[in-house]
Length: 266
Ligand SMILES: [Zn+2]
Image (cartoon, rainbow, N blue to C red):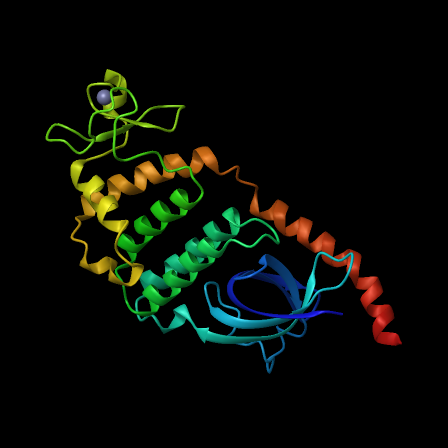
């Protein structure tokens, strides 16, 4: 059985059987993996405290032929979002992890996504303001996936979106931004990005996540960004119901169990 060690980001876990957990984690070098952490729900498990979403860790796992689930040997946390003091930050941890989980391809390395995710953990631990960080994260995530529309020029006339009378209006059904003049009248009432919101995004391109607190932005501007990002994510994320996915993974686990028991008896 080949053993792999990697830097990884824990995304989520769920229960398996009486005492085990399935852990979904994003490795730096081999993409997203799902593995069994044996005994992770026992009181004195070596996995205790290591499996919170967005924990950065060194992970060792065995991969077995013909099996979707790997076997996790150890998880050694190197940075935990739990070191963040604010409850608001901790509330966002699951949100970040869920979005990465949704966008990360299975078993296909995405170094940039890995770096974005792990830098979020560092920024949360460093106390970066979490609402700004969330909008920053959504912007970068959508950019990396190639689905964030251009914020430079109007899709209709090519004029600058951040000009004096500007603002970016999301054209319904097309996922591009237009200037107010090119936006249909009905659309001007739809969520849009003001010049301040566009300025935040331009600055976000050259600011590392841990410095996001240095970007001056109002709650109103963050709310604009949130509304537009929701629309963009909704368009591009074919959401699968969580329960459906959990059931699928449990079925995978059930398939490997009889063989694992046979091995144990040997
Ligand atoms: Zn225009």
